[in-house]
Length: 353
Image (cartoon, rainbow, N blue to C red; front, side, top):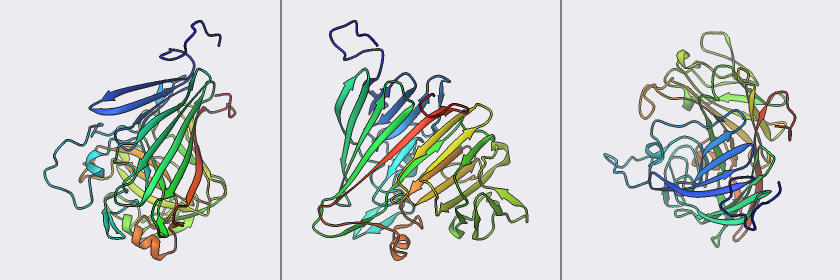
C-alpha cells in the first residue's frame, strides 16, 4: 500500500497496534486486513479476541465473568487459587504447572499455574504497515522462570505467530509443565464444529473427569475418534455437541502424528488451525463444556470447547512428575518454540484466506 503521510504511527490501515485500558486492565490490539487479536496485557497476556474480519466472527469464548482487574474481593480465598474467579474466557498460556493446584518445590501454586494471572510487560519491536511484532515478558513469582513471547502479524495473512521462550533463572535443574488453553465459543462454536487431527492417536477419558453430565462412567481408552460411552453406544469425540444436550467431557489425545489440529465450523465454512511443536506439546487436552456442569462456577450456563496443547499428562504436577512427563531445564538454560494460529474459510488454501 502506498503511504500518503511521512509518518506511520497511529495509522488506520495495514498492520496496526493500539494500547488502551478495559475494565482497569491494560490491553493490546494487533490488527491487519484479516485478523484482529486482542491481548489482556494486565492479566496473563490472555488472547481475549481472535476475530476473523472478513466474516466478523471472534473464535474465542467470552465468559459470563467478563474481564476485570484483580481488585475485586472474593467472599473467601479459594484453596485452588483465583483462576476460576477471574477466568473471562479466551486463550491463556499455562506455566509452570496446570490443572489442579499443587505444591511446587515448597511454593503453593493454584489451578492452571502462574503465567495466566500476572501482568506481562510489552515492548514494541516493529510497527510498520507491512508487519507488527511485540515482545512480551514475565518473571514468575513462585517459580524461577522468565517467560518471553513475540507476537507477530503480517499485513496480508490471517496467521498469528507466537515465538516463545522459557528460561530457568535458578541455580538448580527445574522441572515444569507448559501448555496453551484456547477456549472457543459462540458464534464460532455450534454443533457443526468438528475437530480434525491426522492419524488415529490414543484417546483416554481419565477417571478424575467422570462427573456431572459426562457420557462416561469410568476411565475409557481407545483410538481417535470413537469411544464407547456408558450407554453402550459409540460416541464421536471429534464433534462438538449442542447446548441443549447438556453434556460435559474432558479427554486427552496422545501419540499425535502431527503437531496440529483444525476446528471446522461446517455451518459457517470457517476454520481455526493451530500448529505447534509436538516434541514439546505432546498431548491435546479437550474440554467440552456443553452446559453440562451445574455447579460453581458454571451453573449450567457455559457453552465452550477448548482444545489445548499440553506438554505433560496427567494434568496434575505431582502425578506428571512421577510419570516422568514434565519438561526439564538446566540452570540458566532456555527452551524455545513457536505456535501458529490461523483462521481460514473452508475451501481456501493457507495464505488465500
